[in-house]
Image (cartoon, rainbow, N blue to C red; front, side, top):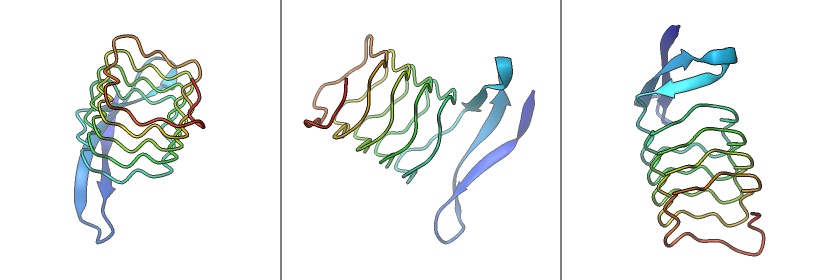
Amino acid sequence: MIVNPMYIENRSGKVINSCRVVYGYGGKLTLDKGNFKGTNLKNADLSEYDLVSLNFSGANLEKANLSSASLCGANLKGTNLKGADLSDAWLEGANLEGANLEGANLEGANLEGANLSGVKINKKTKF
């Protein structure tokens, strides 16, 4: 079942990104065909969302809740994930090159095949 498009607006109300919202099995929310490059999603709650193969390069996901989200194959290159909750997230094959993971929670996250070159971590980063 596909529902109306979801739009993300900047401060002036201009639509900067849109995507289709698709419901999958068990009512899990899926975002399809979205480009969130450079988007400010600070403090966003995207827990349990299906965000497979979406482009978040250069986006601000500081302190975002991405727990149990599926980000397989997503482009997170240069993304600010400082303090983000990625616990139990699926990041198989995701590109995290140069991402800021300082203070992020990655406990239980699946990072198999993920590109982690140049990521920024600190003592508060949990694996």
